[in-house]
Picture 1 (cartoon, rainbow, N blue to C red):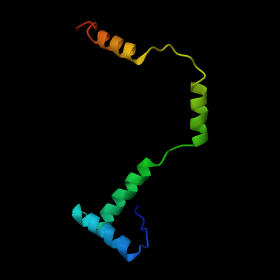
Picture 2 (tube, rainbow, N blue to C red):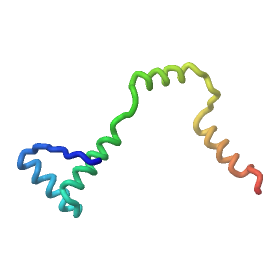
Picture 3 (cartoon, one colour):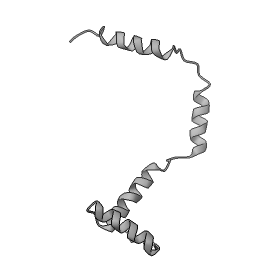
Picture 4 (cartoon, one colour):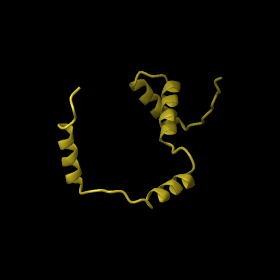
Length: 85
């Protein structure tokens, strides 16, 4: 089901958005829907408190690591050592 959304804009804002939509060969409505979709995708999902709890739990672990240059060299070395099917 679709819903109607009414947004009131000042004339200069409306003209700017209309100009941008035209320059992209889009209707004003299509441009607004696309802009809202992009804005919605940038919004974080989930509870920030839960995310922090997960991060705090993760940093309590100790995993083996090495200097980044050494790790990259080992990865590169491993590429050539895999058995060929």
